[in-house]
Image 1 (cartoon, rainbow, N blue to C red):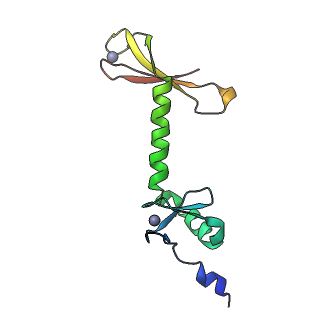
Image 2: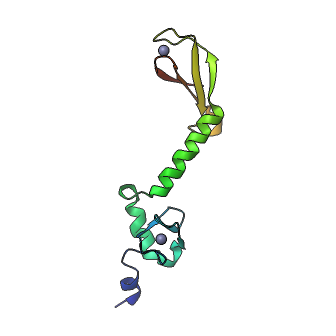
Image 3: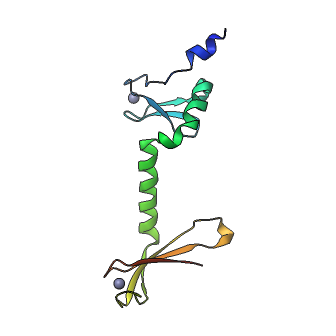
Length: 124
Ligand SMILES: [Zn+2]
Ligand SMILES: [Zn+2]
């Protein structure tokens, strides 16, 4: 009989508002309602359970955060370039770059046409 397993084999609820806490993947449990945080290492068994279920149970907060980061990045690196749209012939394209792989493997340049919305990408 191991009483430790019994104690930590259920979902963890926020100590402040009672909402189910979500494992953010950084060994931190985060409340999706009030942002309260708890060290997941306090709940070793829970950590394993939530990690294996993470794909079907993603953190809403984390998704929102990465979306904002992407938007910031887009704004920073987005620019116009004299490049003909292969679809409608518009002579100015929006483009932005994104590092998809490791730094020494180059980057991907995304073009999009402000006129017709045509999109394509080039690996440099
Ligand atoms: Zn909470
Ligand atoms: Zn176009």
